[in-house]
Each structure stands twice: as structure tokens, then as C-alpha cells.
Image (cartoon, rainbow, N blue to C red; front, top):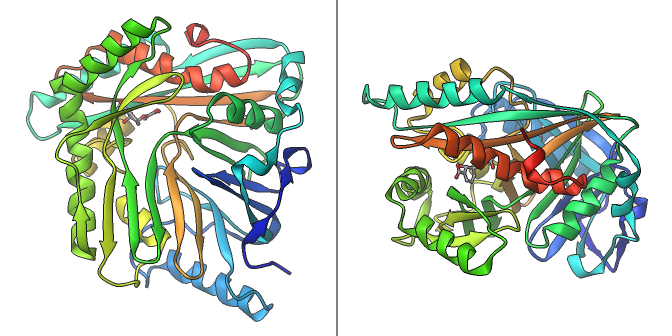
Length: 397
Ligand SMILES: C=C(O[C@H]1C=CC=C(C(=O)O)[C@@H]1O)C(=O)O
């Protein structure tokens, strides 16, 4: 029987089983969700509405768990970029939170060094990606589309099976500030990543969202690194790309909030690989009526991963990207039956299946975007995942 998500004193990643269990690491705590009690694949269409098929399926699942004696069941997992596609959500048999400091990695990160890379290929290739960026920029001249987000996949083949747990441990060691996740997918792969972007956190009536958009690659020379970050903060192209995201999130949250604090200018955050423009939005809900997953569905997909306006940009992505995004640029996280929860944007991630790996990276495209710079931005973003495999981002050709 599932337990109410409570606190465990410690957890050793060595006992985590990525094909059965989910893990979601937040700022201070990690949620560990072990074994499946119920699986929910209902697409998240209209998921902001409590009467939607999606929310009804979740409420039914919660009721069933409550009948088994669990007074606060939890749902955890991933929702794809395209919400008409199946979700990958679980009610675990057991779930608990552990302080991040009390998670032991016990040398897990070393394992993947023994495997050899036999093949790496970008889809689309460099010329096609740059061509797609130019086509998007040409569309802006027509007036209606203001921003789109174009991404690519890096397909990797290895000599031996990859250990998702080893990659997770490496990501953990290398990106101490990230939101880490590991979610088993229905077709036998494991979705793994270290996202820097908080879509929404809800605790009672308090909300926090921390969208990112506008990026620059970190530099190894500290003076140059500072210079690059200042240039990003001053860049009108990047501030415009960022502002479209913030305005849309604020517009969507406003009707549900009695207080909404949106800083007037972005600040900077960094990961080991990237600088980003960041805005931390804090809000108080007017009532407790909407749960964390409804709020996440209200915002998803934001212009940080889909562009603006939504319909036109989604069409542009369908025309210009030669692959299905699947879980990439979706959302991953948890929600309990009391409505609390936390969802992050599924970026800086990949899917591991046996000896095959798919890594994903995208970049916001606006008027003034340069195809070479966007190619290099995706290359730099791949650095987060590639480093967890022991490679550097220069290899993301
Ligand atoms: C789509 C991605 O990043 C988004 C989040 C942060 C910054 C972004 C940018 O500057 O383009 C993107 O909007 C990705 O990392 O794959």
C-alpha cells in the first residue's frame, strides 16, 4: 500500500531502479517514488480545467488510493510537449521526500565511463537546422508570428547498455542547482535530465514560477564569463525573447491570483554550461481550488519552449522540426491529492533505451536571431547531458 509522501532520513541512489521508480529533485528535497500502483496515460488536453478527462482520471486514481488507506496520494511523472499525446504519470506504491544532503551517490557516476560511443548524429543536421532558423526568421517579417523555438535531437549509439542511474548520478554531481528527474517511459526508455527551469511550484495558496529565456554559453575565463553575462542582460533581442514568456505567464496566472509579483526586469542565472535571463514570479492564489497540475497545464507549453503566439508557433515547429519532441519540452514533476506540487520544464534532458540515447536541445528564435548563433546555443545546451556521459559539448556536431 502506498504511504503518504513523508520524510525519509536518507536514501542511497544504488537502490534506485530507473525502469520502475521515479525521482524528482527540487531545490532542497528529492521525491523518490517507488514502484507503480496506478499508471495514467490520459492526454493532458484541457488539464487546467478540473472537469477535464485528464483531471477526472487523476481524481479517480487518487480516490482509489484513498480507499486503500492512503490519505494523501501523490502523482508523479511526465507530460509531453504535445498534450494531445499520452501522458506518462504514476501513482507510486511508496513515495517519500529526502533532504538532498542525505542522498548518497556511492560512486554511481563512474559506471558509464566503461562504455564506448559508436555513433553520434544530429537530427536535423547543421545545414538543415540553420535553414529552419532562417525560414522562421523570414516568417517574422509577415507580422503575426513573434517567436518560435527550434530544437534538435542528438542520437547516440553505444557499445553496451547505458546505465540511466549512472547518468543520473553524474548529472547530480555536475549540476548541483538543477531540478533532476528520472521517469520510466512506457516504451521501455528512461527520461532523464537536469532542468534549470521551474514551471510552477504550489504550496497551499503560494505560487512560484521561474521562467527562463535568452541564453549565452558559459566561458572558462572568469572575466570573459562576466562580460558575456552582462552582454546577455543588455541584449535587446534576448530581452524581447524573454519578455514574451513573462507576459504570457503573467496573463495566464492573473485571473487566478489575488496577488501577482512580476519583477519589471529579468535577472541572470547560470548553470555550469549556460547563462540565462530569468524572472522569478511569485503569486498568491485567490482560492485553493486549482491544484499544482492544473496550474502547470494552464501554463504549459510556455513561449520558452513553444514560442508566441501559441497556435502559429506550434504550426511553425511542426513544419520546421523533422522529429517528434515526445517528452522533450514537456513538463515533469508531481502533485499530491491536497493540490501541492512542483513541475519543471523538461529541458537539458535525454531518453536512454538500452544502448541508444536521444538528447534534446532547443533555442528560442525571434527577429534578429542568427542561424549560426542558434546552432551554437543548442550545442552549448547539449553540454549538460553530454558531460554526464563524459563528453564535452564540442562533440555535439
Ligand atoms: C528549449 C530550451 O531552452 C529554453 C529555456 C531556456 C532558454 C531558452 C533560450 O534561450 O532559447 C529556451 O527558451 C532547451 O534548453 O532545450
